[in-house]
Amino acid sequence: MSAACVLLQEAYGMALFRPTVMRERLTDLTPADVSALGVDTLLLDVDNTLALHHAPTPLPGIAPWLEAMQAQGIRLFIVSNARGSRVAPFAESVGLPYFSLCQKPLPFGVNRAVRRLGVPKRRVLLCGDQLFTDMLAGRLAGVKTLLVNPARPEEKWHFRLRRRLEQPLLRRYRRKEKHS
Ligand SMILES: [Mg+2]
Image 1 (cartoon, rainbow, N blue to C red):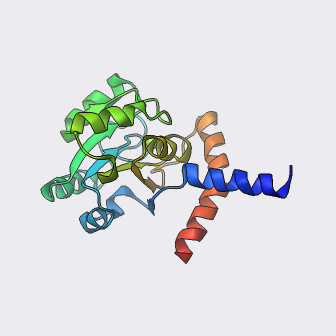
Image 2 (spheres, rainbow, N blue to C red):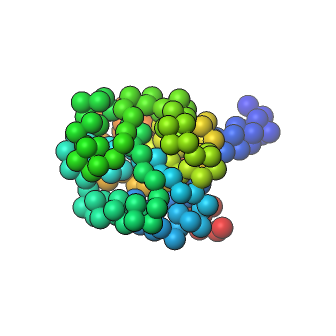
């Protein structure tokens, strides 16, 4: 493969998966960050972003964080790839509207949520823990994205593989963020 080809591929990859902003945890995002990004609507992933996989309750600090965001007039909506039987009771427990089976990285679930909320895409931030599902879905849908560190490393092999493939890109994004 020629050097130009490699460069092009890298540039493409960077653009495609690169989050607009990165934080350690979701609760590190402040209402001031949200307004600095020019958004007023957060689309939220569930597993490893709001809660541990299969956990019926949110991660520590998430419930008050959700309340603080809503108190600032920020709209919240859950967009999860998980089934309704997983997402519905969780969404109900935190009092948020949701779509399950969103099929991220495809943009349709995100687009549907944006339409339901009736907000312009430039005012939407999709928050999640995976480059190849959440960040790509956000990019394809044309909304801004926040990447958080997964709350706990997954054990299933396909997750571990994806996490491995994320590593070189993540290193680059982190380096870039430090220098920007
Ligand atoms: Mg997730």
